[in-house]
Length: 331
Image (tube, rainbow, N blue to C red; front, top):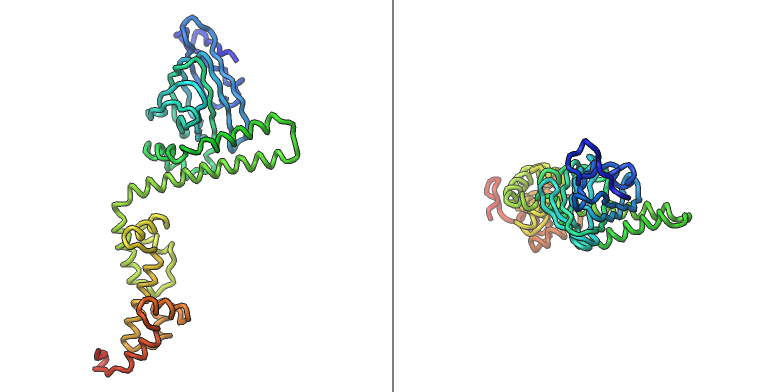
């Protein structure tokens, strides 16, 4: 539709305010644009949109626009994929350039986009995701521009999947209704939302890993100290994570980097070492196992043999046969 010039409220005759009420996919935006050439009085935006509250997709075509400014809604995360045309600008100070069949930018809630349009015509996709489906990750992304950049990197290379999903949603909207269309629409939106949520979570983990890698050694040391004191309790991975107040993924990454094994394997080795010390001191197998948080089972015996080259009852029998000096074994 033609973009109409605004009246006396705007001094610059080239500045137009788009009639967003008649542009379905952009009705939530406060959009301003300028048209090319002060004497021109028309700028064109066409959109084809579909989806719903969880995910709305729009294919947007513009002609004869020179600049564009909009503010992202407070409950949306938008992924922009370029199709044709040249344009660029900033999203809250982060520079971007249009990319054909690539990610132009990702805009977070309440961010402002300012763009300069270099070509006469442009075409692209806007994928608007509701924040409620990844609120925690979305709020974490807002803490740092670096986090958002890593999120963009995580999405890049998968534009074809997102565009195919968006095309399918628009095809469902325009085609003759069939009984399976509703299920296909929901499945397509769910796949796209799950994909973006997974990439978002992964990019945050990468950022967390980069920021916290210098602390990994202290995490490992603190966790092992905790194991040494409470090995006899029925500890879980969650209990170990609570020691350092980090996620399971971070703690496992720290142990893999420092010790080349998982936290739970380290705990098991700690218990087996404590078991061996008790057996050397003359304790029987069942009592020793109960004191270190292990069960006197065949699996425990097998794990013990793998670690020390003999079964627990062999260690117990061998050291019980040695002469004692007081309460200390003469070894």
